[in-house]
Length: 264
Image 1: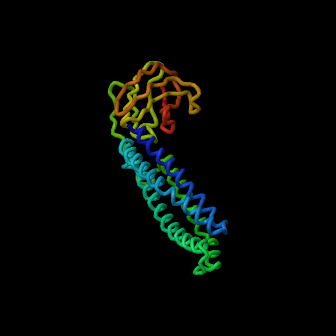
Image 2: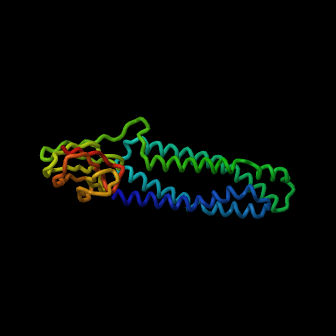
Image 3: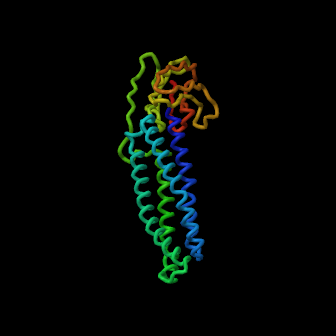
């Protein structure tokens, strides 16, 4: 189910970006407008996308929370940092954007209605504000930071989830997968010139991993490619004999999970 929750999370992200893109365009367009009636229409357009945006946020939160459980990410610092960044960015953008847009809506609506209660100086002052660009910068930096946290999954100095797999007495070496960042063992020692068993423990619920051995990190020439294993499951690969030397192994689904294999 892990991949489906990730799919749901990404679908929510796409929905959020589509809806919020309307508001972002309007926010950056407004400072260049001088027609009060057109400004009022643009503000109405932005407001019409808010409902869809919040529904998308709900979808991405549900998918992200459940993917955090099935992917065993809640014990890692990066996911908590991403949540803190998301909440902080949303709070800052809401506080800054709501007050500015409400004041602009009042002033432009009054001017479009022909009232003299609002002066041209007030109208020009709010349109000349740098707040729209500050709001856009906060949103862009926040999204990029969250994307970095999700892709690189840094430990941020707090460590990560520790693997609990045990060596197999029937295999020459054991590899354990417990997240999508790295194998528990990034250096294996196996006998050269004879077939050997390679025990693989995939502890990721519903996440496919495998172990493949290549001549080098270009992964251009394979010596052995293990079948995909959906976790949680333990298997022992029967690896054919390989010559003495140093080789490269990885998960073909998540190439960032890799290491060095020494045959001697």
